Image 1: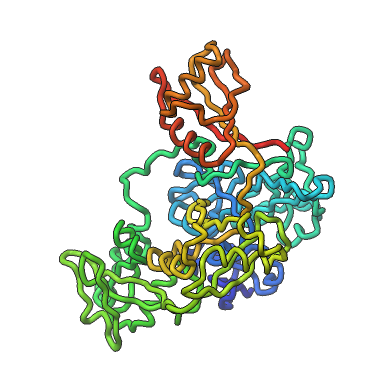
Image 2: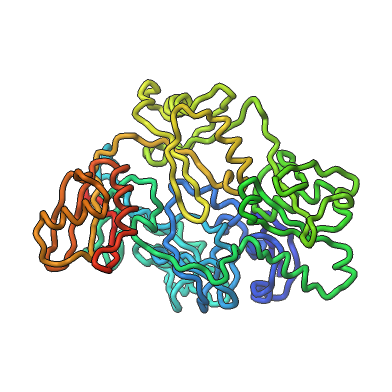
Length: 514
């Protein structure tokens, strides 16, 4: 029986094995550990975890649980069982992942608010949100009516909205429209909701608090390579290899968050560079990168040079050699992608060449033109920097900022973060108010008393909110409304840290029903 080991690009090598089940439990050296019969290649439904993060159109952050041991499931990144190490799961869409694999988790949670004023809701179709694997036991395919669950591997597809399940080879034959299944009568469709625009992460908007990990050590500092290499049984193998600390930018050196790679002591510069790229899961042209050694604590660096670069590399006393992975910047120009996802246009993104003179406002204007929107209206739009690193975080870019310098700074600070940052166009004007729910206040007070308490907690002399109400007097909770995202964000941050009468307030941002 022939199987194919599919690596980072789902293009792997062919081997001969007696049973596929024998392979699934093995520890593979490739990034995504995908195993497939050669004859089944055409039916592969999943993207490789090494590139999936770049393929998502409208990223939505997951709501992660606390790390723990999750039994009888499979990691959606490395496809191995979750039984043997700490894992987290998305509490919204049942996306399971090892803590060590979380860097590669795809921010493709259910998009719960998709209202667009210019679109007719009656003509919009709610599509399925398909997730691979971890199906309930005895699940049956909605298409062929046969069992589609599997206990030995990550297999089968399930819609996270309606719960319908199907084989990977059958799910493309499902009806395009999702009817929300058993929840149809009580489900508020996403195309009827908008979420207030803020620069706060989703977990803060929903007031979700996460405990600190035990030990307080970043998982990036304890790499599988270091553990396996340090416990190697073969003394000769230990003598022939060396562990290097790899930093992907100035920020990682400052915070001492590094990853380790094991290379031969006679490794060339190219081999060290390629190992570093694999360690940071960077899928790009290797020739665009180079490696340097860190020569002092201030971050000064020197190029590594062949024929034996590790022979003269500097090693701080009692520590391993420290290596920078760098990008070969063109000082004159670069290419950036601008996404139009929130504008709901048919084109996913456009590519623009920016030079030393290009400002952000010019990027906005040119992108609008490529999206088929009048470029003279650029002042109605913002360029939003969206980071997909362990969630989704946003920042509004200054229109007068130099675009080339912005990109170069991202590359210099962290190559890993640079590869998970996108630029989106967004309309400046948000026609919707920002409603904030505040609970755990004293019960049965008058509206004026509640207003005085809020003003005191917000540290304001005048009301920063435009309205208060409804008020649920018997529960000591109320809703306050702001007309700008900046005022709402500031209030949420202040109130979530506030305590009144020894009680911590419950503060949530509310969606708008259209």
